[in-house]
Length: 110
Image (cartoon, rainbow, N blue to C red; front, side, top):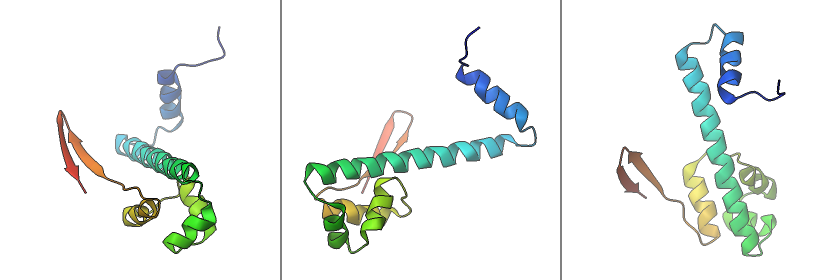
């Protein structure tokens, strides 16, 4: 017997341990986890751009008009506002875009 479990077994045990949670509750939890992961990836990407340009968090904070602590939070994925993230990216000479994907269609958005 192995000490590892496959993902399906882990999810099944979690659902069994929380029988009161509805399918909607589980879907909500998945959406929250997905959003947190996307924020982490975005923050990490911004940090990589900043470091590639040789900028410090203090320099970016001054350019954006926020504290160095807030820059650190953003780079750790504590992101709450897309428009602010566009301002942050702009200070690095970058831009944030997004698209809507549905099936095989991709609709670009600013």
